Image 1 (tube, rainbow, N blue to C red):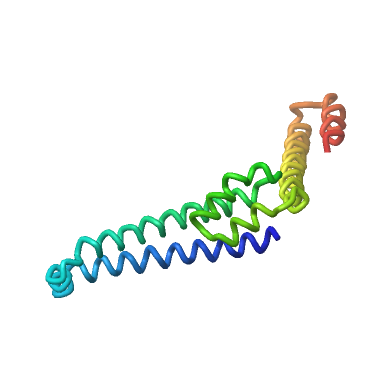
Image 2 (image 1 turned 180 degrees about the vertical axis):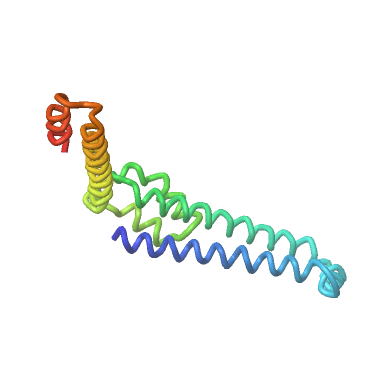
Amino acid sequence: MKTASKVFIILGIITGGLLCGISTIYLLIYSSGIYALALDIIGFRATFYAVCLSMLLFGIAMLITGSVSLRRLSYATSKNELILTSVCCLLFCNMIAGILMLCLKDSDLNNNTNQITDNKESHSITTNLESLKQLKELKDNGTITEEFNKMKADLLNNL
């Protein structure tokens, strides 16, 4: 269900981008030249600008809400972290994505916890290996002699 939520959020982001682009093009085309004159004659110019600007603002809201929702969904570890984001996504980005996010279970989000833990473990292993290399260089340079075995054992125990 998490993957489906991400797909619908991405569709909402694409729709928001298209809405921004189309409303901007309309504003650029119809604000100058003969089109502006035609809109003035029929008294529709102010209404047209209001509609285009509201389309543009709603498109920007879709882009921002979709981006935030996608990021929060990637890093959330419990359903409680997603409630506000889900409601905002439901209202401003994509209704289906918001509903799917509200229906997520904590077990669907456990993969995020595993990824965060794996990243921390791999970072600590890399740091300890670099420390072992530096320790070996210090021993080869003659900077440390007797302490090498004790420090090496400490670092290996931390792995």
